[in-house]
Image (cartoon, rainbow, N blue to C red):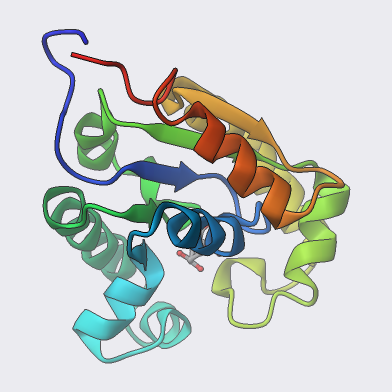
Length: 180
Ligand code: S3P
């Protein structure tokens, strides 16, 4: 383990764009490991008493990003299970710094599968308008950020969430968790 490696906190942190399957695969992974699952969007909603969509519409994206940053920082300190981050959480520089040395897993998805999985984009304020072109833009902009943060990248195109959870579980204890 390198000297700056983090030994506490989540067992695995899933990142990737909307439609990557973070929540579905994350829940399966947590069940498989016998630990709790936490999703940063759900934590933001619980703490604010509002849906993500309502926060975007009523308070604006900047307010959401602030709430998201605080929720992620809290979860990295207090949650010992599997953590899934909203697709845009890694845009925040403070969050990116907090993720260094952690077991970050990038769930990669291509445009076709991402569009299939988000459907009409209901409940996802950033997809209002043309879902396909918005998803493409987000994939193009963010893939390098996800890649730069990830200790493990898992391809999700055409695959079932169970297989993805299995892949991640297999890596725990090897590349994801370096031994001391
Ligand atoms: C967002 C992704 C969403 C949610 C919000 C913004 C983004 O989470 O945080 O709608 O910026 O990509 P999921 O990736 O879990 O859908």
